[in-house]
Length: 232
Image 1 (cartoon, rainbow, N blue to C red):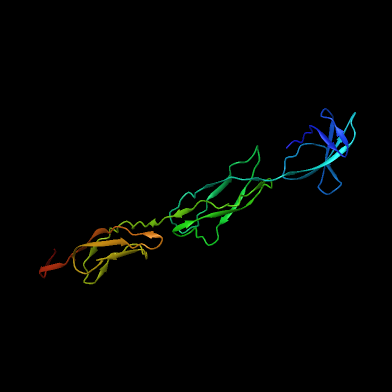
Image 2 (cartoon, rainbow, N blue to C red; image 1 turned 120 degrees about the vertical axis):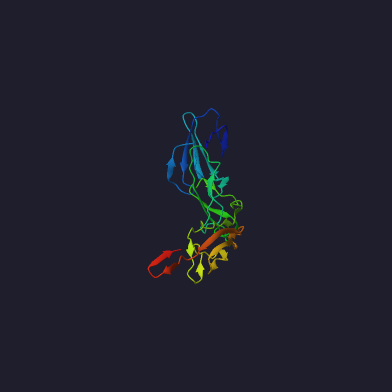
């Protein structure tokens, strides 16, 4: 901001429009001179004494105010909004900075919101690093929505069982999210084992997946005569 005098009259002293002026900037309410300049950039209150020079005399005092600029916030959604048990945090920047100004934004999860589990949440900007800017009255982000995760059923175990007269169990990596049926068998044969994800508030159901599991007959030895045994 640059202060320029075009015409000025104060207390009966008139300064012409072609005069040479000296601006003396003071701290508001004080007597300590800050600098001789008619240029001000940063937010604040400027107390100036304007004095005529050369063929002009007299002085006047003026107070000028520079208010902070309200920022425009630009929000970017987290890289992934699929549930993974971790908090989701958007990024936010100021999109209307002037010149080479820099300004970081501090933002936090809006009160009573949850950014870890499935559902919608918002963040609220709470502070700026540059005092020449001010947050808008509504500094809340758009809503972001976390969606349910799809649980992958583990790759089928290729174990082949052999009949041993006892129950044998086909197992997958343990998880409370899926159920296995028809996986406990005793006799030799081929069985279809079913696996299905039973979703919860953060996970989706899945279509049932089947795998064939085989229990091979046990190989036995048969003796035809005492001195001649053959394996069948």
